[in-house]
Length: 221
Image: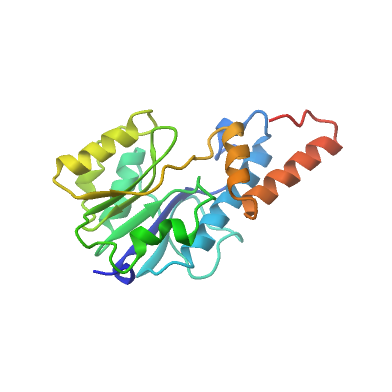
């Protein structure tokens, strides 16, 4: 197997006010939180378009909009909890699959290269990208068995540890990617923008801060 046999998945919500990044509100308005979510998702999809892959698929809760670049397939998320939705996304793949979320706009081709390189699946059954908040930002499976995700508690400080334990408990050989910060809170947004100053996400955060200053709103984040 090579990277060109791998399906790259991005799981995301449609960036609509009140539906995404609700933990950013306050200090940001729902509209600002949605703008940041759209920028983060666009950054992620543009990176996905640059990496070698069999297919590039957005697993979407909602409907695609003008922010969707050409070259990305869209499939709807299934019903159920996040574990069920992740399991279904992997289960729909033939051959190896590698999934990222929409909350890490600081990723780049170099960061993903180990999991998508020519030897990514040599002596490796799974790739795991831990997140600072205890979750995970990336997961790759050589054999995308939905049972490896179904039933893992999500959105908890120990989610990443439990998911990794599920992989190793199944006898999989797991390689790790760097630990990254998801954008969940306003502090996260500032740190991630600083880590990716050329990103759409950083530009959106700068615009929002400037608008807040010009209207006299409290611009502290």
